[in-house]
Image: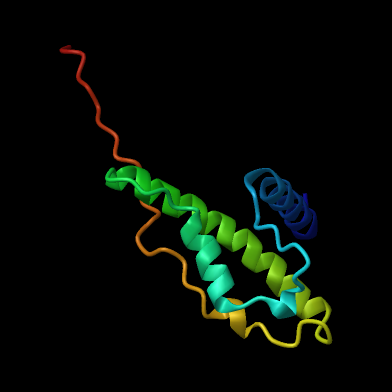
Length: 113
């Protein structure tokens, strides 16, 4: 499989995941009407209130993945339609959650042998 085919396949999978996982409903708003605050509120709203730090971190990691898909969609709109989307500054100012992605901690158990 060539580079272009892999890119198209991964883009399609990202689109399907975005549909399933809930990219924000922008309703009647066009991309040019979005504000940084709108996008930051959307990102923050995906994190449940929890005292469990691991659940919170996992939710932040999921929100970051969704943010990456949405940002790719917004960047594509910016590149393909500069008249309707004259600037990408609104979403460039939004920051993903820091230190949300980390490897799972695994423990091994000796079978005594």
